Amino acid sequence: MSQATLDEEDYIIGANEAEVRRLGLQHALWREAALGAWRRAGLKEGMTVMDLGCGPGYAAFDLAQLVGPEGRVIAVDQSELFLQTLEQGAKARGLDNIETRQAAIEDLVWPEGECDRVWTRWVLCFLPDPDAAIAGIDRALKPGGVFMTQEYVDYRSFRLEPVEPVFDRFVDAVEASWRHFEGDPNVGRRFPAMFRRHGWSVEEMTPEVHAVRPGEALWRWPASWLKEAPARLVELGFLSSGDADAFLDFVRRREGDPDALMMTPMVLTARARKPAD
Image (cartoon, rainbow, N blue to C red; front, side, top):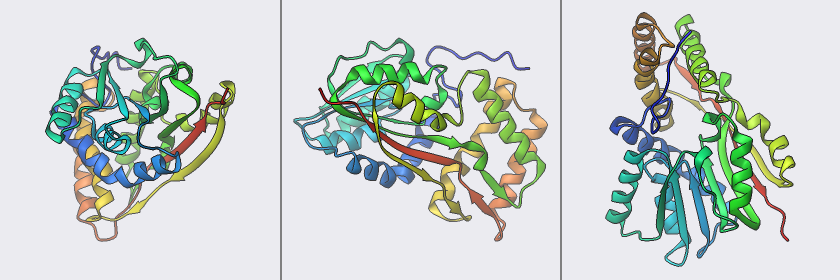
């Protein structure tokens, strides 16, 4: 059993320049889905939006443009590197309506009723107590405010065909690392109960899964991570170096296989509204 621990500003999947680049690609490929979720949530100019677990700021930049100069984005992350990258990116884009706050979510001093909208993507799944985060989001939202999120709901739906045993060993290692650090790779399944406990009304729960082939744009989203994750899992003690090498060879062969098919892990796009006074 791994005895791995993480530094205060680190993440399971890392917080480094390579991850900054990977997150940029990830947002580019999921940007349309995020814009659609925000549009359905009624995001408007002049609103205050919290981007919780903002990373290097790719979503925050879009949110800042959408709420306009009269609006505000509160960008929260525990990584100094990610927030420095965000601040540099905001300056380069001429955005002065993003306020950064460095804090782990469990240590965040939540604003009281300041936010019209709160957004997270692949954040709650890494938290030991996502319900405590929902309680904080409830405090941060104005009456009638909306929480918008995209989180995994069925991680085992992730497949790469034709499959080989090493793929299942890799997914086992990913899930073991998640559980070791008290996360939940299927946290979306808990949303109805968590939202109900805080009196929120559910407005959307839409599953998103994609069947992609080598060379297609969305293939690059999991593939970029699949090439980086084995080394991280070896470092943390969840995957042997032999399996890491075998897995990378498997991924390379699937990328060159005209019959390959990847099913992306199922994501739940969810939206819930805090009661109005």
